[in-house]
Length: 424
Ligand SMILES: Cc1ncc(COP(=O)(O)O)c(C=O)c1O
Image (tube, rainbow, N blue to C red):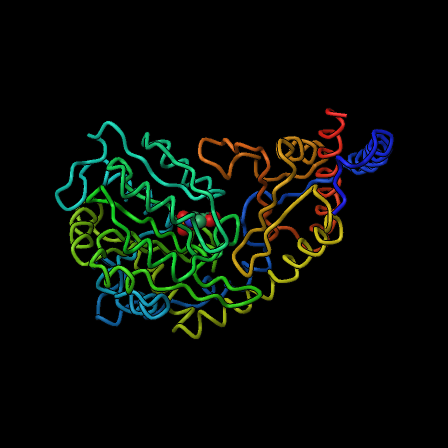
């Protein structure tokens, strides 16, 4: 491997000069590109357009309920059956909520904060609540924890999920540790898939807190792109240890059909879901069944959903390939960048040289390329080594993405060379 530090000062200065020229040339083009958020492209959204155009002339649900009227708190049977078969979770244990799983996660935290769970002390009445956060992770999870004043504890992400030795030790020894945030398949941003062993250890581990919760945000549960990775069933794992009531399972169709205009679900163990349903019953008379029917009519069954996901993967594959091939061409055998090679999901996560991520993102922004803020993938926006950047390739067209990646690589190199020059 060619390390930058092994180059002479003259070589580095020469490199810096050439990169600066390339960078200035890009800047003069006044481009405007966005790889900041995991938003589907218009072509992806178009795949779901028949949800909007198909007539909804039969508004009676399978149970004979008029979807236009009040009635049914926890979702129409056909949608619950669809998700139950898709995710292999019992339909009795789920509630089809509104349009957003993040909203359901926020509400789950709020319920624990205000009411506690199954008789335990409300988290809001405790001096300290700690939530384990595998890092890098999803900024909006961290924002929720921060708003409730929960102390977030960084847990390094390994190839097969969070560092379980650390998770087990913290959960066992500290009663203030009340939960863990998990995106178990194609995680945001690493694309990490939790192994069977990880899921079983999470289900079976000893916890000092009786009301420990696993926030199982399976946002990318069917988002296979290069290969289908299967996730060990958390309900099966927890049943084995009689720990079902530590599960809080979330899923939505946001990254499947229309973000923010789909349907979301929360599921929990037998006892806790009963309590959650009581709270839901006070919060709402019922969610939007018309939207539930539209989504169901579009997919019809699990095969329909999987066919749709295959079409989605066809859109995403070339984009992931552009990112991965460009990084390979530009950085293989260098110490300037390391990156994940996800098999699905929406993101590629990169690590620059230490203390270069912020500068890379700044350079990119100045030249017209928006990236997720450096630090966003860590609790409190604090990436200890200032090295992680999340790349979201779904939104731009392939042509735009090629251009964006060229610029991105220049920015990574420029930030790295300048950093090494500081010490020469
Ligand atoms: C891990 C994760 N959870 C939740 C969400 C948001 O989902 P929703 O639109 O259902 O709130 C996202 C969106 O990017 C996500 O990446």
